[in-house]
Length: 402
Image 1 (cartoon, rainbow, N blue to C red):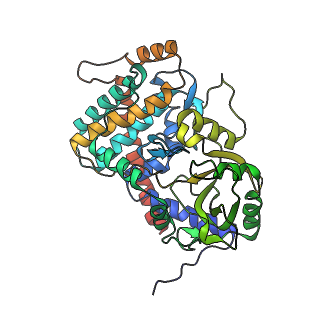
Image 2 (tube, rainbow, N blue to C red):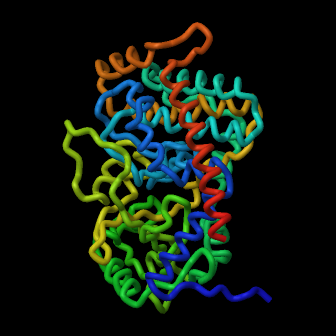
Image 3 (cartoon, helix red, strand yellow):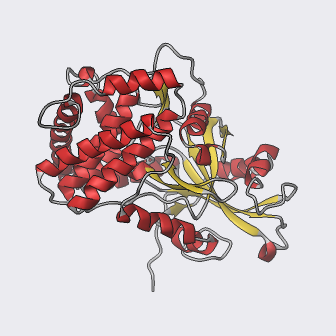
């Protein structure tokens, strides 16, 4: 018989458990540590090494551009493209930050795959080639390696039952309380109920092509969601809703999962020259609409318990690239392809003159031995060293605490 999980019943107990789980997740691997420690990357930007990277045009950037934050995303009409899928840290800033952050993530995966150091150099070459092609070519699609195609084809096959079995462990209209989902406090449950009475949310959830825009939306269940390294500590909830039915007729409802996530202040440095939404939820949604149109059109910024939150329906096709080990051929292909995806997200925001100037800036400081700018190589080497040291220190601290 499966043991019952004792979920926290107070905010203080919740915060304590979230902190412990975050430490455990970040201790799992050096790459997990990099994913969960965005702040260290932006601290590095203030160092001498960080100040050597080029300053690009003021555009919306991801702000936390690692491999796990890219993947297949569906729009409201069912069209699926690989785009940026996590925009918590998005700001109007320097596009170089996304390039270097992605380079660090690629380098950590290469190290975790026991690939030689020269492979990391070749991955950075491929990444720059993919990114620059995104700025200079009119070709929307780019040849994807087999490891990317496998995930993409899986996304196209997925349906509601796959999402329900993956997230809820069942297709029944309820959220299982346990290690992943915790009970809401009474005040939170009331706030979720009020949220689902808002017309803007009903409009958002009936945007999908196969739904009637006049359909009603019924809240069936809700829980606190324990998910991800960087999300832990911020308020995050998930709701199960029925579209086009009522509480007495759930069997005929079109079920959906709704992600409700607190928008916190971004750690990514923003441009001081361009105005940006002051509300953090509006910032995230606006950035998403510029960088990841498929996702941005399905998001809503609002308030929840006096905190800014952004809301989106979780679709079966929205999955991340969970890449932990790579062959040499895969490593080169993945670097080129993902950098191209990031480049296209930046490309959408630039006019032809800006693209030309930025491309020329990226072409500087190439060496005879490396077909990538020296600032990218030295930045990634410095960051890998710092994060490896930080990871070991984190593991030691975590072991002592245990």
